[in-house]
Length: 131
Image (cartoon, rainbow, N blue to C red; front, side):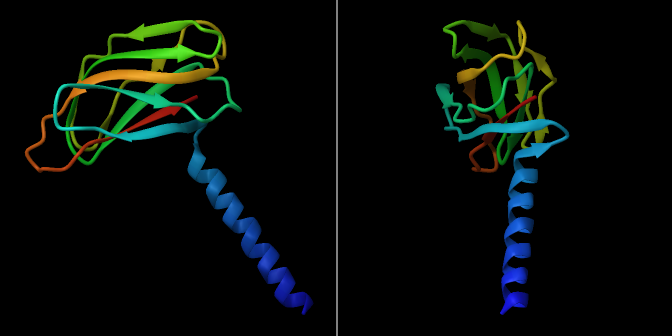
């Protein structure tokens, strides 16, 4: 009986470690992912991660291609920072590292304006990483 309990406990600990690693890679944490439409659009990503303060962002695109025009980061204290990203993402690409103004900012939401260029009929998935 003890050996079965030990195995279950070990499996639980390994599972929790795997989940933790999926949220953190080299200090980057996943702030959220949005599947974007096939047209010129604006989306808002509500950041549910409230246990971290961030100094940098990185945008990662998977699936389809995406043309990003502008990003506005809304902070919990009511401030905001507009980022002129203007980047054409290929189906598997990422942005430059974007520095946030101020020190260790809590992010409430991120608004972004984009359109898609998609010859493969696959919607792009935009993931925002914070560090």
